[in-house]
Each structure stands twice: as structure tokens, then as C-alpha cells.
Amino acid sequence: MEKNKAYFRKLANQIMIDLSDDEIEILQKEFEVTLRKMDLLDKINTDDVKEMVYPFELETHFLREDEIENVISQQEALENAPEVKDGQILVPKVVK
Image 1 (tube, rainbow, N blue to C red):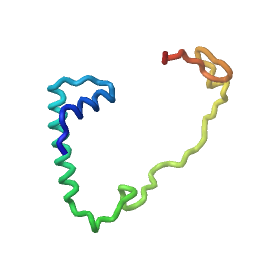
Image 2: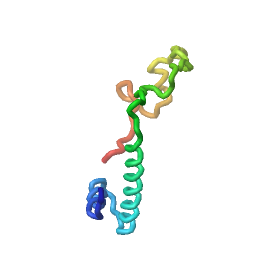
Image 3: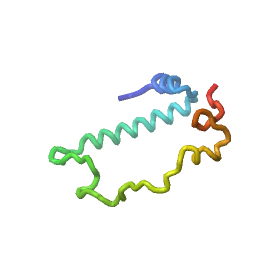
Image 4: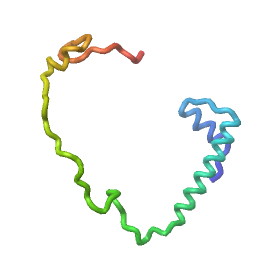
């Protein structure tokens, strides 16, 4: 699957970045290496390999149960907020 410079320039344009010709050549080489690695993986025979949903054979139970403790009221939670409106912390607008 040979990808030319126009292909990579189009992709870069779609994600709004500018690439020099040198950067595109580097991307082309890295892409070819990645494709060769994927071809190697495709050649591995996995017919008798059982699918895994979880990476361990035995279930792990090392996580603790959630326990509710030290619950504070909404008023206490908002005490140190610089500005509060309708029970919510008011923050400056960050998107124009």
C-alpha cells in the first residue's frame, strides 16, 4: 500500500497541521515500517488461540469495595469557591 506525498499532505490538512516535504518523507518511511510490522502480525497463525476478554486467567479481586465515608454537604463543598451561582461553582468562560 504505497501512499504518496499528496495523501499525507491531505491528512495533515484535515487535522490542520502544516508539514514540510522532509516531514512528509519521514512519515512515508515510518508508515511503510508500520505496514511491514502489521504484515508480520497477520502472518502469525492464531487459529487455535482462544480469545481473551481479560488479560489474566484467574479473576483478580484485589480491588477494595467502595465505602462511603466523610460525606460533606453541598454548602460545605462550595464554601471555598470564589464565586457560586445557583449551587454551582462559577468559573470564567474559556472558549470564545
